[in-house]
Image (cartoon, rainbow, N blue to C red; front, side, top):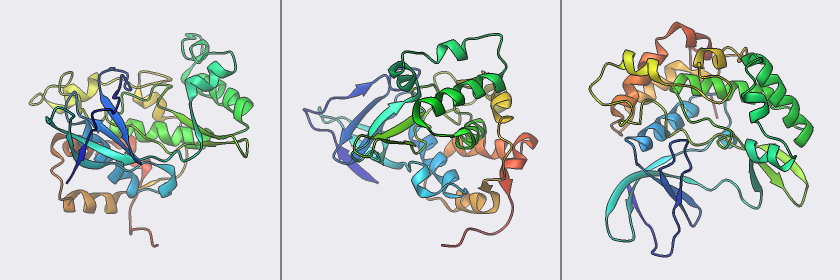
Length: 268
């Protein structure tokens, strides 16, 4: 495991999750995130492992790696890092995209008269209007993945687009930030309590608090290779602790079976 030193002059970005208290830094070409509520690093690493065993291309998701963080005062902390995928492109969150067009996602998401499907369609219509992109398939697949890993932090600032100011083109950014998944927040989901009770407490975002209703939006093909995933889980040199137990419970849940394909690994 590498140790990443945080320079004295580095400015921590705090409040990047919906719970508002995880510090992260951009050091060179790396984004470094410190654990604050539990095992956010393991959640990110395990989410990366799942996506390695999926039909997502490597450009469609961000990979996370474990690290030890040496803070400016010399204190050591646990966390993870990822490589900066932005390049020269500008990042625009879903929320900022609406704000730039003098609107707000709240008008859709807080409309109690709309179903989950209607909210989704309204959001996607606006995204296409603002960017020219049709990302409905990518978005429903993302919500299905979030349901599998119990990601409680997919708020509208955790859905990202990239804008190329030279080419004046838009693209859907790689999916990122799964730290508040797999019951990683041990403050809200204490260790030692039954998983079945804790898992029922987790609420989804952004369309509905029900993971099942967001999961139902995805009607595509299986995108996770179950055999490969299980093999890599068992071969991992990282002790994944409760995160691994939560994932195995989800894998066995009948609701998620249509996300999995059986059989061999992909060929390069």
